[in-house]
Length: 339
Image (cartoon, rainbow, N blue to C red; front, side):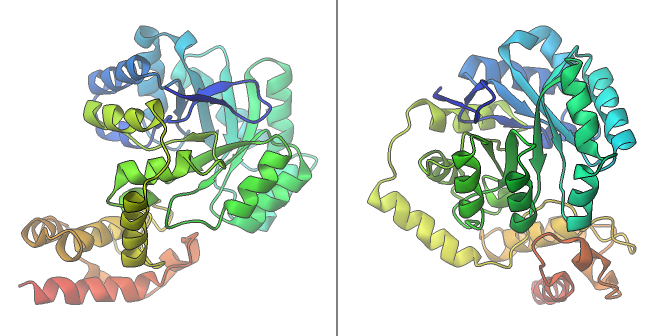
């Protein structure tokens, strides 16, 4: 597995890391097996979050078997003031049963006022700096989906890493990553498969590791086969062939811009619609030639897309400014025509 320095942190991380969101979907035993397989395949960077339900707990328990010394552990929390971040750091340490965390990130800073709170006299950054001085964390990072906000954070200079979406269909972070690298800030690619929307997953990862913009990409993994497939991309890094670039270009054109990245920030819907899954099941039916499967999954939803009352609360939360209400209306028509 190829490794790269994560900015100026001194951490030499595998170019492919483990994204901790899907760990929630498996058992503790399966999570432990996944992390052991990461160790076997040379993956030494694990990213999770306070908000990923049992993810921190599962990872912490797995480290007792896989060996804490074999991994750099990153987590994050949506705490923007001093007290909330201080509490989140303590909770993460307790959940993972760790003496220290390698990288603690301020999670999903999506509004300028949140960044202002983070950087204020009693902001989250102060809590992180105190924790670093005490040895509870070793490095400080920030994550988000809005480029302009993270550009401000990079200019401020208080962060050692940034985490931002990057894949063949989401190139809005190129300027941000270049600026970060100039300043010695580590770059972490979230959503390396566009939230699962990019079908040629290995090519998406190959595109990222060849970009010279990213220190580590963190695809979510919930099976041993996914670990093996993703890790293989980081073992023998070869340039994209002309044919592979053509495949990528074709899928980029097919996806367009108005696709769901499955980030889940649109939730909860007041009516109970599982918005990301509606779009996933529609994609199964219309893009991946799995009409019966997509329809069966949609039919099994307790609340269908036609329950939307157009309150648009989801749209106000979406970091990609998707026209969710119109997309839900389109999904209703899609599945009606599949009857």
